[in-house]
Amino acid sequence: MARIMSLTDAVAENVRDGDTVAMEGFTHLIPYAAGHEVIRQGKKDLFLVRMTPDILYDQLIGVGAARGMKFSWGGNPGVGSLHRFRDAVENQWPRPLAIEEHSHAAMANAYEAGAANLPFAMLRGYVGADLPKVNSNIKSVTCPFTGEVLAAVPAIRPDVTIIHAQRADRKGNVLLEGIVGVQKEAVLAARRSIVTVEEIVDELSPPSPNSVVLPTWAVTAVAYVPGGAFPSYAHGYYPRSNAFYIRWDEIARDRQTFTAWIKENVLDARPEDFARYAATTSAKVA
Amino acid sequence: MTDFTPTEMMTIAAARALSNDDVCFVGIGAPSAACNVARLTHAPDITLIYESGTVGTKPDVLPLSIGDGELCDTALFTVSVPEMFRYWLQGGRITTGFLGGAQIDRFANLNTTVVGPYDRPKVRLPGGGGAPEIASNCGRIFITMALSKRGFVEKLPFVTSMGHGEGGDHRERLGLKTKGPTRVITDLCILEPDTQTKELTVVSIHPGVERERIVENCGWPIKFAETVIETPAPTETELSVLRDINARTKKAHEGAGPGKEAA
Image 1 (cartoon, rainbow over the protein chains, first blue to last red):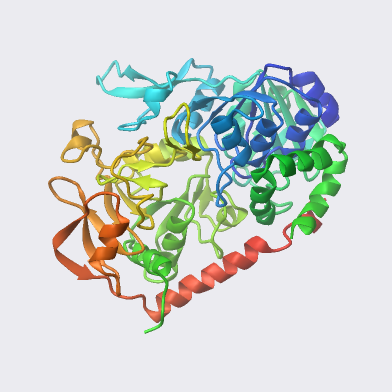
Image 2: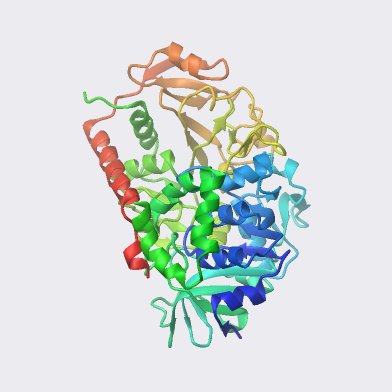
């Protein structure tokens, strides 16, 4: 059964140095507040997993929390490069970053294989592409029925998956809706999971019978963190701050402005500051 | 005739490549602008699909990311990302993929991964994302990129997604049954693969563009088809639709944002 606890305790208990950590969110519902708590608690040597590492992973890489990353697209969507990620790969600053690079289709399939307790995923993928030449975790498998050769990648099994969702009930059942990404698979593939939520309610009252519900017995910890996805967004609660994503390009381009931003907004802040930060940041950057 | 920029010409020429019957996997940036201009002009019933899982979207402003709320709010339906890649893309339900890239070669292979060696890159780019499988699993591929020596290169340092590989029947030899890139739309001209060699060949030149400019801006000795036409200039309607959506998008993205509603 999921325990409803503070964000500080949820991260302290469930994220350990050296862990393989997936903080998922396909543009929507990205767990920024939880990622900032991971930075604040000084977690080390993490192996980060995410299909679309964007600003949050740029921050984790920039502070040196990551030893490596498995990913399929690492950029600031619609804006350009992730400068901290590039600095790590191109100049090994603040430390080298071992990368394991896949395509979206392979990552999505690999999470699904993890959730399904399978050792690997297969797909019609990577035909004519160079990634298999530089990633030894992309192999092939022959169909026993037709002889067709398909791409194979290992299942993703994170030590801990962290996501953000719209709401949970008091038992710890969690509801997500809108663009649901790969979050359900990432939670079910993981040994432990933390879900931060906008609201804790008596009844989930799903507006649609097709909403994604993660039952309390499949989740480790739930933390109430309103605004916890900002500057990404929570469908039905607040929109994405595209202005912040544009502004991040300037903040992250330079090591000093990045470090100053992290100090002010993450290291010297507390978890409960996050809602206030979320409420004021877009005004500040406009 | 109203004045227009090369980028406007490129976007409108790309939009014209699409029809009402297309089910189109849309990349962010120029492809997204082209697809939505098509939807708002001659192809109102086109189905636009973004890799975040939104199917049949009709955004009022262009999304900054592939998962902006606007896309889900206006979608016919939204599916999980594994479902998007497994059932809809790999399942062969998407007729047209629309891609951009940092670099392209004469056989329409694309690079969005690295410039320089993979292990010690000069420039680390975002990576392939959905492109490797979009390129092989969509019925056909359109590509839109500004023509420049930096982008149109003799040899790619890295093939992120395959176009026509080494040319000729390379795709068939690898077992691919889809057409691959059938058109590359630039800011100066339109290229299509030669029917036999699959080398990209100029088939249409935008108004006011000299052949020399095309030759000078391409990183390989570019070929011209026997018959080259002039791309029809943008119409008033096409231009006003494109400018309106760009103005709405600019306003939406630089606004104060959601802060006040966040807490």
